[in-house]
Image 1 (cartoon, rainbow, N blue to C red):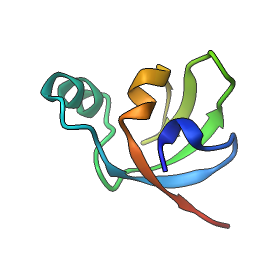
Image 2 (image 1 turned 90 degrees about the vertical axis):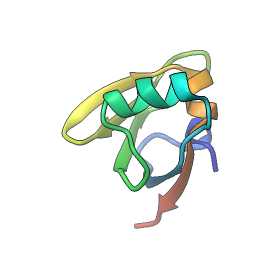
Image 3 (image 1 turned 120 degrees about the vertical axis):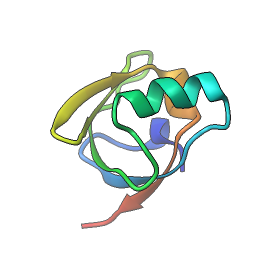
Image 4 (image 1 turned 135 degrees about the vertical axis):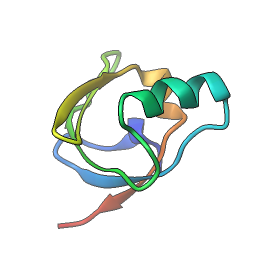
Length: 75
């Protein structure tokens, strides 16, 4: 599932990042790497996705979220 498809309040782990090197440099520099656990705080249409990861609240644009594959953690 893509990060952009997760609902607010959902928990997951990043399973795969896009292959674009520029994207990888940007996204890993803010601490998002494969295996990182996170929580989706807010995911409204046409707005950035708010994600809480590594004790930081991040606002990710929707295009970037389309490039991030995640595994949802139930519970």
